[in-house]
Length: 291
Image 1 (cartoon, rainbow, N blue to C red):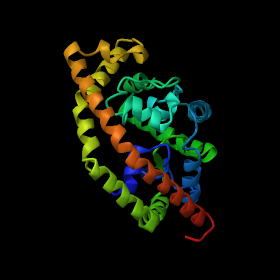
Image 2 (spheres, rainbow, N blue to C red):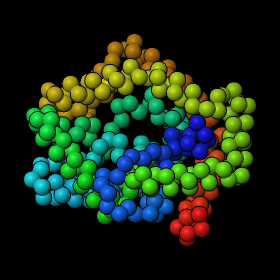
Image 3 (cartoon, rainbow, N blue to C red):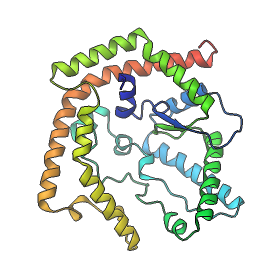
């Protein structure tokens, strides 16, 4: 994976527009992708209150949009709609000191104002496959409409892009990746990590994520069980799900993650900062019709 794509994994907040995209909900004329990307970048550092306010607006519009076609919809803010660091109100340095990468350390963390489980899930479970398809199709069209009204969501890595928008965004990212300043910064980043004895690719964090899998999966099962039983899962914590032996194992993983991140992230940050600067320059060029 290229170093610039590592930024998307490490700093979702800084590069909300670029990690991935999906097809647009319909064939309506699409906003120029450079404008969408610039909007997403501008909103990447929205704080928790700003992020929750955005989703409150969107949810209100979704409710009305769904109702217009006779569909019931229960508004909610998904737990992954708010970046963990933003939700905690921490700088990146503070976050790393306390939580490392946030892989094993925040499994049971629920950002205030969000929910673990979609409250529409039970209603959908009672529908026929055809009804579910109609409901989901309408919701996707409503989301496309709110995207146009309110712009990209804060702190989020995924955008709904048309094939044309996606191709254009790839060209912009390709230009950023090839910029000599970004290439040099990537070399410095790689050397910094390797001098400290770490892999400069993805394998390091993937190993941690894999090791924590059983804890994430076990916690998600407990959340689903609580929801099925009609219990509020918001207060559910790891200590109520795993044995003392398992929690001790997780604690060792967390200590390993924090110790590692404290060494590696200072190698990543200069690259991230430079990439963001160059990315902004290329977006400005694209917006001015020069790219």
